[in-house]
Image 1 (spheres, rainbow over the protein chains, first blue to last red):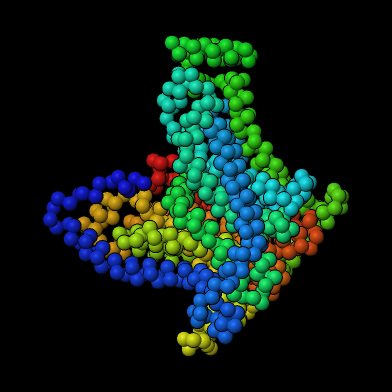
Image 2 (cartoon, chains in turn orange, cyan):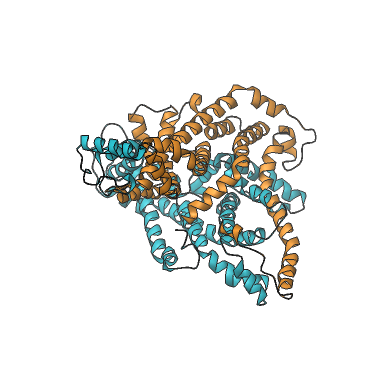
Length: 294
Length: 335
């Protein structure tokens, strides 16, 4: 961030700029070649999945690595017109949106307190939430499954949503607290002088001012929920409530003979995450940077 | 006018609530030392929901995992068959677990060795002024965003013995190199490493690029003026300044590798992974815990997995990350 503001205009003497320029020019073609190569490697498997969906099983069996001789959209149409795919997308959307909403709301409220109230036990509270980073879901998965079962939330999206909110809280709080701390005290004092209550201040000032941080946190929570596998695997045993990852897996084993259809199904299921990512790429990358720098 | 009004109403509220702040008449509310009852209620209302969800779904299950780990328990009714440390002894003596632990160790080391240098080189190259830089970044990050299930399904189709990879090798005349990539125990773990590298290297590149952008431009420029070559600058200026980012990435990578589950479970399933030599502690946990109906045992495995991660994390913190607190040139100001 600071790099953007540093002035790059320090070139009064005639000699110095030359070596910089040559070194940059020398490197550029190499950089392009490497970039193209790497991108090719990164995208090849993705393209294989997408293109494979346009082929027929016969083609795939005789020539597994070829291009479609006739581009055949039948597989995609089958998937898109069948109900399964849309039901999975719907379930994943519900789980993702509810998780995001819950994480943002609970995380923002807790971060507000941790950032702007002084009270005994604040440090401990923050440390406890931060310690949550040490407990990955894998460790707690069996008891978590029992908790969800005892709450009667087995085979319901709620049983996935609540634990996901809980496990996303540490990251959320760690990203949001510094954000809220950075809001100047003067704004708060001015608001109070104008008769704003603390809660009013929260809704009218903190929420809008924290928006960039909130969006980052929300996107991270949404993508994590969209892709999550272990928790739904334990909680959801019924086709009707499957989320997309479970659905893809069960589709792949159910139609294991029909490779082309599996490929079409798989490639359609990655589209939402890719679109979402393309739209919010800056925010996501910014959020990760912020998280690492603490 | 409004100043007077708001402070006086606030005072009244405080007094009505027990008034332990009545001594400070006009002090701005933010700076107050003692917490008024009203503020306490606000704190409770605001933190309460997050705290309940967090305690109920994170802390409680973790504590229960530790408790259940001492029982032989099939998950029906409350656990009664207390076995002390027997589960733990069984785990540590089970050759299958030891294999899984070894695989985790291999994955930890290979992840660092394979992804680190590749990601550094890519980040250094991409940090120079390139056309379409943001597009390149997005594309490199794509595998990281795709879910593990999609990655696993796609790769396992490609790597089947009659899949696209072998087909392609045949086509370019390297048919003798075609392999049973997934089930040959000599190769499977390398296959897994290729997939892991493919999926996660973008994340490392993005982190490093972010770190590189935090390095003030004056430093490499000054070195260039003094006649340092491009690679000299990278070696002696950029890399040392990037070290804090590298250390944090390595930390995330190590922890992730110790807890690897999704990819292995999806590609190799619950039974084949151990014969193919790709089982991890987490797949062992699920296979021998829930899938085998031994909840007590599964929880003990979870505790072992957690303790191993914790010990590694603490050692890393003590010997590697602590360097960052000893005053590097960068980042001190932003903290």
